[in-house]
Length: 76
Image 1 (tube, helix red, strand yellow):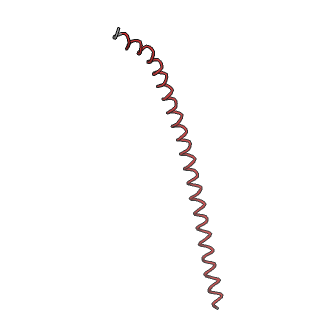
Image 2 (cartoon, rainbow, N blue to C red; image 1 turned 60 degrees about the horizontal axis):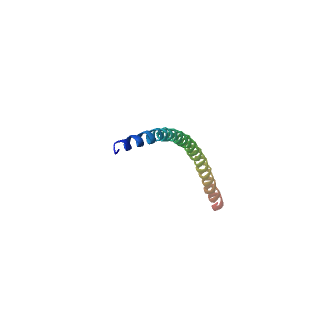
Image 3 (cartoon, rainbow, N blue to C red; image 1 turned 180 degrees about the vertical axis):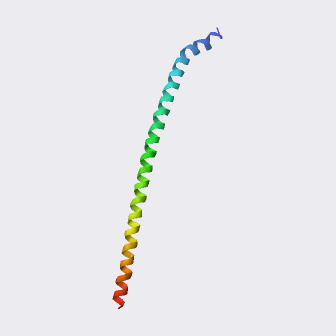
């Protein structure tokens, strides 16, 4: 009688475990796809931010040069 219990458990649990394993693999695939898409979006956002910061830096430098010129003219 004791030997039959593992057989019963095996027949009851193995199909469910196999099903859960398949669902877990599918979920991992979906999650990996979502993380890849998110990574691409973050990378694009990073590139855009770097471009905008570069533009702002150029404008600031230009304004700084103009301020120097205005100060020199004011001294004269």
